[in-house]
Image 1 (cartoon, protein in one colour):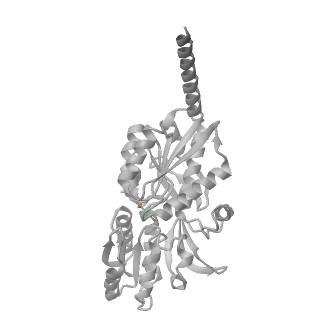
Image 2: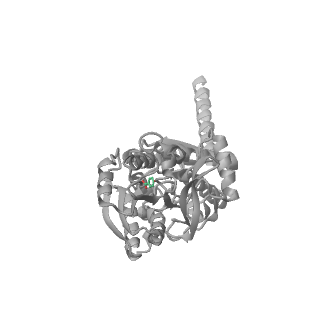
Image 3: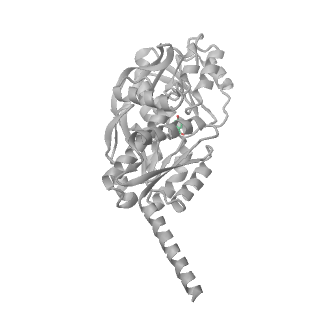
Length: 390
Ligand code: PHB
């Protein structure tokens, strides 16, 4: 008899335990944020995590009655690890959304998991054009390299730059940058006399730069991923390339706001094209930069931070619309077509491609208020990814 009572009590306890567990689960909304917090792209992880936390601090952690739970995982900049973490987050943690993805191979490795589990995958950093085609569950809030490169190839020949050497990291985004810059430059009457590719991991730019010097182009066009720009700039200047009359141009990844202020006066005058500058003169951006710096010991938000911040917004708004009902498919539908003002300027998520449509700015490095900034001097409005047009 005693035993029976005891067992009943245990059964009751288990029942009530599991019902609270279910309740807690039903009331929470989990975002699995996979980022390179260590390894080569660690600055990307640092920026995006800070931006995601700022978004939550500003907008609360309860949306449509659900408690938002941010689960941050470090993939150490290793794509196999990204995939394993994504699998664990979907199967064990039952996350509602996967987000982050510091480099293209990490985003691509996760795509099949998003598809199989019908989990929206919000790509906040990686920028190879084809990523959004790897799964119908991918939505992107960063940018694409064709988007950033084409505008610079329109600007260059009108500004005395006809003969160019390209130098890119040898993987997805670099190959996109090389191809789209070159095609457009040729279309505009310019020429690319040499296309150089450097390894993604631990590149030594010295032998490549020597070659560029010998070729004497009007300009060197560079793409390297966020965080690697300072090394290029240093070696470019050390080799006296600027004094030899070779201009440095590229996508804004090389004059990354995370590093720009430490690059020194040698960076002055470098022209790049990109979707975000910390110096973007809008009220929304000024507010964002101020709050970000206040929350992060003065750290400057770069384009990665903005990709993370806007990605959180896309997730929050989708949850508001669906009220957490309908699972991944409903969330995805509510992400498509979102249109809003980002710190970068106006942006929208193209419902057809799930990719970002945004302004691309031409910028020049200038000293303002004692600091180095990418100062915008021209804008090409509402640019769709040119990589999708073919
Ligand atoms: C990418 O791997 O897709 C990537 C990484 C860093 C960038 C741009 C693209 O700055």
